[in-house]
Every structure is written in structure tokens, then in C-alpha cells.
Amino acid sequence: MTVEKGIFGNIDKNKSVEYFVLKNKSGMEAKVITLGATLVSLTAADKNGKFADVVLGYDDAASYMDNSCYFGCTVGRIANRIKDAKFKLDGREYKLTVNSGKNQLHGGIVGFGRVLWKAEPFAEGNGGQGVLFKYSSPDGEEGYPGNLDVKVTYTLTDDNELKIEYVAVTDKTTVVNLTNHSYFNLAGHNSGRDILSHQLQINSDTITESDSDLIATGKLAKVENTAYDFRKPKALGADIKKLDNGYDINYVLIKKSLAELSFTAKAVEPNSGRVMEIYTTEPGVQLYTGNFLDGIKGKGGAVYNKQTAFCLETQHYADSPNKPEFPSVVLRPGETYRHLTVHKFSVQ
Ligand code: GLA
Image (cartoon, helix red, strand yellow):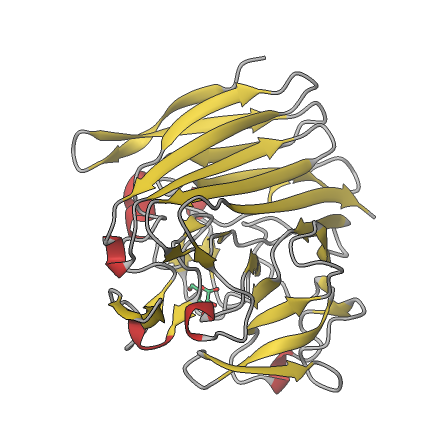
């Protein structure tokens, strides 16, 4: 079976954005587009076999060119906030573009989420379908050194897994920390329900502490006896009011070795019975509960308000380029950056 494809829309008058629909034998569908190598929809069955689209998104290319919330897109070169939009590498300071207060957020003004990627769809021999996206980020883009060649592969398997795999190589020493910024609501993106009754578990006992500007301080803090404790499954809403503005924090994942593919998090929506488990090779995951969503007009007339979706962005810890004590995000010529994240869907 070939991968269904077509034109999603146009940007800059003559540039077309392509879409691809990946399908599996149980009826799941994942739709991705070449703008930002973005996941625009993902259907999953509930306990009665009824499918719903569980990610937030837009219907048109122009909205994805703006996409100030980063719905579903690939984020890079560095996900999360870089304090004062600068960092030092091998004794030299690099100044980055500024797009969030004095800081850089999610790779800068354009980043990897608002550029066109080249796409090659493929159908796997043993079932499942995928798309390989490629983007060459030029030396100096958003302030980062080195020409960086990036590949992002989405695969939807017959085991109801959406796999996202990242590979990058550089010709000058640089920093890389890629993620996907999908917003999930397992009741359905247009269910009109908030995500506070979702049960969440995260395989972590430690967060990277952040200041009032959401910048990582470099300190680690235990989750025990705090609202951040998701070591055992807990409703997202159980302790959320104890925080100023919901969850927006990086968790340090418990791992045997740094790059092993390991259990990261599990979310369950009790009403529909939909379950999403996440596994990643990354050392951390950012939990963000859609605190800045405020009446965003999304797909098919849906309106997205505060805390109607959550993100679990697998990545290195926030502000790693400025925190030598954190696992390194430095990529040197001859080395290969690799990151695999698996989203597995089921019901209970
Ligand atoms: C990330 C950040 C949030 C917010 C969103 C985008 O998840 O942690 O603070 O910036 O992206 O709106």
C-alpha cells in the first residue's frame, strides 16, 4: 500500500506544503506535513473502537507558518529556553536570535518548525508506513554554528506505535537538542474537555528547577512531596492549582544508561480508556500543560483553551548549552546525533 499524499496548502504564494497520511492495519492514521515536519493529526481508538484525533492542530498552512504554540512541529536546533540567547562553545561566545523576552525559545524566530522540509514517504515491508523528512540548516542560522543536516522519520507501525527518529550531522562543532511539540488530548482535540482528569505517570523522581522566567537554574530538585510528583499515576489536575500557572517543567528520566530507549511516561484518559505510553532515548522530558492556550482557533472549528492539552517533549534538559553539569548537547564533526521517541497507543 502506498502512502497517501497531496497538497496541504501554499505559503509564500508559490511554495506548496505537502501532506502524507500514514495508516496501519488497525485503522490508526497519522498525517504529517512538510512545513516544520509537523504532525497535524493522529487518530487513536477508544475502548469501544471509536477513533478520535488526539492532537491539536490547524486546517491551513498559513496558521502553521505562525504557529506560536508550536502545535505538532519539529523543534530545533535547541528545544526549550536558552538564557539570554547566548552560549559559549570551545571558548567562543555565540549570540542567538531572541524570540522570548531576552531569551531564545525553541530554536529562534523561524526555527525548524516554520521551514519546508524535503519528504520521502515509504511503506515498511512488515506493515506500517513512514515519511523521512530532511532539512539542511545553514551555518549561522538563528546564530548557531555549522551546517547541520537533519533527518526526521515518522513511522506508524501495526503495533499502534508512532515512532519519531532524529539524526543530525554537522561540519562544525555545534549544539543540537531536537524534539516534537505535539499537544495531546486523549479525549479528542475537539472534545471540549480539559486534560485535568488524565492520569499521568512519569518515570522520574527529579526535575530541573527553573526560575520565574521558566529558565533552568542548573539545580536539580526531588519531586517527593511536591505537585511535580508523578512517580505513581496521578490526575493532571490533582495538584495543578498548587502551581502558579500549571506544569511547564523538565523531568530527569530514570535510566540505566544515558541513551537507552526506556519508559518515559504513560497517560490515560479515563472516559475513553485511551492510553499513550512514551519511550525515549533522551535524558529528559518537558511536561507542559497548555497553560498559554487562550481561545486558539484550531482544526474543524475547535477552540483550544487553557489546559485543554498537554505536551510531553522528550529532550535534553532545558538550557543545556549553558549548563556544563547537564548531559552534553554538543555535536562535533564526525559524530551523529540520534534520538528515538516512541508513542504507543492502547486502551484500558
Ligand atoms: C514549551 C515551553 C512552554 C511554552 C510552549 C509553547 O513547552 O516549555 O513554556 O513556551 O513550549 O507555547
